[in-house]
Length: 165
Image (tube, rainbow, N blue to C red):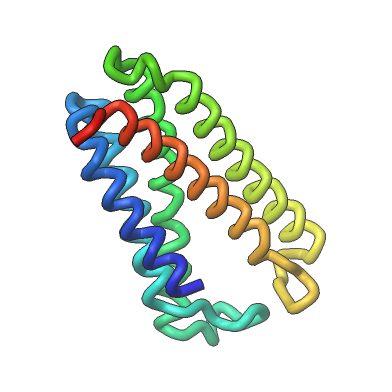
């Protein structure tokens, strides 16, 4: 997972660079900033390993706490992704890619909601205590895969709109 998160962070940075001309203005800058904060969280999640499931908060390691901080920062990236999608949908240059951006954003949103609701349900069912029998890591991976789908679809459209070089 560490390697996957670091590769994902690199892909996020490449995406921001590719979309930079389309993200001008207040909304585009805000979306890019939030996306960048989420990417910083992804980097932290990749550099620092989470503590074993069931670790009590007072026993958490510094690395585990930093990993958790990375996850919290990742939520800013979710909001940034939605803002970036809205900005792209509003740009005339992205009109030919509108359907693809809508589909990508729908996949992203569905993945986020499945992850969020699953984690909430698992947390409620376990009384807020995670252990080996509470598979809380899988919903996170569903959300991450949905984010990767958004990246792939939007990157493909950005490349297509850029034309031959």
